[in-house]
Amino acid sequence: RLELNAVNQDRDWRIERLRVASPDNVLTADGLWQGWQTQPRTHLNLKMEVSDIGKALARWALPAGIKGGTAKIEGQLSWAGSPADFDYPTLAGQLGFDAAKGQFVKLEPGLAKLLGILSLQALPRRVSLDFRDVFSDGFAFDSISGTSKIERGIAVTDNFRMAGPAAKVAMSGEVDLVRETQKLRVRVTPHLSESVALAGALLGGPVVGAAAFLAQKILRDPLEQLATFEYLVTGNWSDPQVAKPERAALTTTTEGAP
Image (tube, rainbow, N blue to C red; front, side):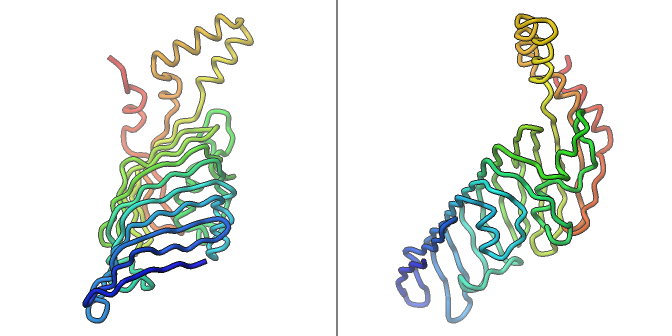
């Protein structure tokens, strides 16, 4: 269902309400279609709520890189051209993103593109100490959040976060939406402390387990800090290059030390 209410003002169209709704997502926006007859530029305040990310991707004829999950995207965007002529090279603005309760699906690198980068399928196998291939087989997430500033089609973030039963992930850097490349620093922390506390409870009794759990939290999860991995992800979306930054292990293992 499409709803549109716009008012012509000299050389501009003021978009008072734009709403596009389907069973699995709703997009609402308002803004300005500026200089539409001469040098058109679109400015939009937008909000999208997705009740099923996987179904929404299929409806948009995109690779089904996520199974299930809900999401909300909100922010402001502008680009050269009409609302129907989305243009990455002139794209600017900022977006906030939140998602919950979904799972990335394993895809071929060339097909997955940006979703493949976010799912971290390119990271080396066995990044967690229990030797499960957490990312390549599909990372399940409880939450994803982040904000991004966009200028000339390049999105920059310093607070992209993912959390799931197996690990926590933090990402910072930039993604070039025009050239389909990225320069990202990725920090992966497998969840270990609760498992250690549980083992203490089983082997030494509930008092020992509780003491281990409290000690780990007071000391800010020292075991998880020791098991944190850092990577640099560069190259293009179809063939991302993954490398460890120099001295990353030393920086990670000494974090919080006196």
